Image (cartoon, rainbow, N blue to C red):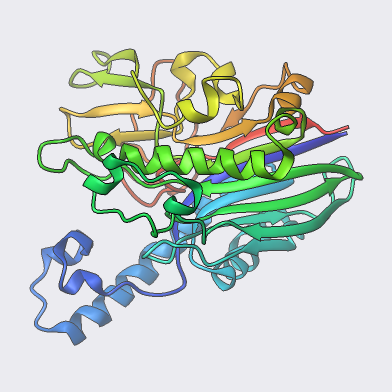
Length: 370
């Protein structure tokens, strides 16, 4: 009995306009920055027109990427709310997959932008086994102090013990697949951000992601017991915004690009993976093929890395020891530099930078749940 499970950061699936760019240039789209805009009223009109014009192509590509993942259960990140998810599923995804993801779940998390994690499920697997929703639990209210996770490093960032650990949520959903239990933990960790006072963004924000990783582990061990958690069937799905390895890109164009695999000395992922607590199935792929995101700040800083994860419990990983994930890269923009032999046929209308399905790639795997 198999289940197709996937995770995908859909990049700002919003049902509202963001007008903050009028006062904060960092939030202003580069298109509007080309024009002289007289006042806020004019900015709002132009921003609405720009957003609507860009969104249709983007969401067609997002839907194509989801359809290509062929998932029975899909964990999403950067979803505005359930209304946005319903509108996307009905207006875009339905045209490609038909009556598919009728069960949809999300909660309002802690993100100041209002982007949340969500889960969509079919009513049955492609094999015809029923997918039954059992319960849902948000862990958004958990604080650093409550879990004993507040550290001097967090204090140095101005974070107080009473503040909430998860930047979005750790959304816990129990399901039964053909009667067999499975628990899903949908997460989206703190983003790296840019450099701060000369410190790389990844390093500056690492204490937050470490606390989030430890909090997820605490949630799982509290639920199942420290001695029994590894024997249960659960999976952590989402954008963890960190990597243990990356592929550094150097050179000034094909065919002179050089790709070098670099291992990181530390990662927030270590607190979920180092002692075998969870298993990263993407690491079953060759090192050069594990990436789910292309990062660049210009020719001097380019790399491919894995930010999107399906972390299986030891019991689930052992039962699926030969299962290998798929990474859907057809929605990546043309600016993404692919290692030799990995080129794919892009979806129709993908642009150099945009439109694109997302800056992330969906990751999917077929698991035996019997």
